[in-house]
Image (cartoon, rainbow, N blue to C red):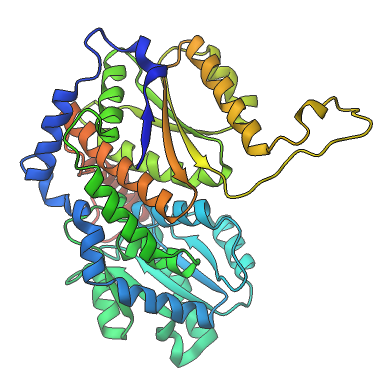
Amino acid sequence: MIQIDLSGAQKFFTKAGPDYAAASRAHEMLTSGSGLGADFTGWLKLPKAILDTELDRIVAAAEKIRSRSGALVVIGIGGSYLGARGAIELLRPVPGKGDPEVFFVGNGLSADAFCDTLEKLGDRDFDVNVISKSGTTLEPAVAFRIFRELLKKKYGAAADEHIFATTDARRGVLKTLADSNGWESFVVPDDVGGRFSIFSAVGLLPMAVAGIDIRRVIDAAIREFDALDLRSSENPAWQYAAARQNLCSKGFGVEILGCYEPSFRFMAEWWKQLYGESEGKDNKGIFPASVEFTADLHSMGQYIQEGPRNLMESVVRFRRSRYSCPVPNSEDNADGLNYLSGRDLAEICGVAADAVREAHIDGGVPNLVISCSARDEEGLAELVCFFELACALSGYMSGVNPFDQPGVEAYKKNMFRMLGKPGAV
């Protein structure tokens, strides 16, 4: 289970401290379905639901892809790709022997980035997983049109066998295309928003193709959600949500999420979408940003240490490392580093993290430490469950609907009008 250390924020809290009574009310609203957006809280039961419905088919599809292809192209944007990409880069930053490489497209409109991906793909055999609730979102729809043509050129009449659609169960353009062309398809649940969908086929199919044991992930997620149903101030999700809201009330309106593992980068991107899209509405919300330590200590570190005092800092730390990497002894000690000889790099990194925390707190930055067991399937499940639940609680505590995103449509209307889409206004 996730552990959280609030001691680095203690002196910055209001006199009353984090409001656990409000966290309790938010938790009850969430689980009873009495809060705003209750129709989109299916993610709470998603691990158990997927175990009983699509998990076996997802595993079988992944095994088929792994047996015949050197790559999987995942087409999606926002919640349709960030969870999977975050999980893959966290757990499989280097593809294992025999693992297909997973490419992500359809999350932007850069011609250069798209063509760079095509060049990296080369002439490898590949499959496509297109992920969209509707099938009409511009970025993934354009990318899918291009890749359908590439599949036809490469595989001819067998092209449709290489397309896997993750979409609505009953309606929409992509669902209609999947049914009419015989593509194997999986469901984006009606009661789960994209940013909460990592434990559905949206996240699980790409993860399984990359070599992640998704059965372990789901089993761990079931246990973690059960553990996080604790109705007490000892619940780490309550602690995180209440601490964030308390600090926000003191003027700390920007949260920086840091981690000392470079492979955490896209998990941080997923976190930014989760919290930004859930909380940023009604002129409310904590702005989510991220940094990669220790690299960003030599750039953004100056701003964090001595910039405006509107920052709070949350740092994800893993209690166990995958590898051991001791520092060797040097006979001449020209670099003066023999005092580190024999000490493991993970230990040194931990000391650096402690030193940074102390410096930032002294500099006026509240610091929350989020401790996860390890960089493995169980650790991934712990992080996702914790962040999802805390996000919902924090949103309810701030008085917003954490499960809608009406503001996302504003740019789309302008874009379609400017592009001359029929009927656009």
